[in-house]
Image (cartoon, rainbow, N blue to C red; front, side, top):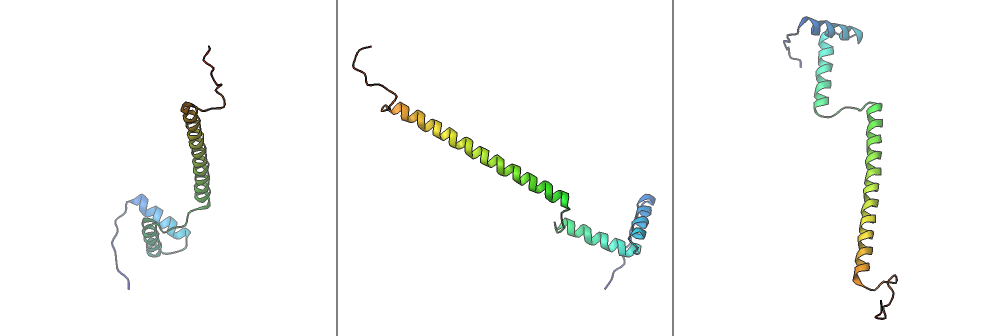
Length: 103
């Protein structure tokens, strides 16, 4: 079942519509139908990503993974450093010599 729709376009848009319909070797009606279907798919986020976008997305994922690893390493170093300081302030440490009361 088809429905008739009236569209108002400026001269420039109409010329571009004719150009692209002719380039695809379809009628203006068929081209508009395909264009509307593509716009609806895009609105629903149902479209294929071009290869360059996929490569860029993979690159960003790799960068975030490395950044996460670096933050984890920094966290480990910081916690280890504070643990060492706490051990030092508790008293018993092999670095401290036993005092015999004389300075």
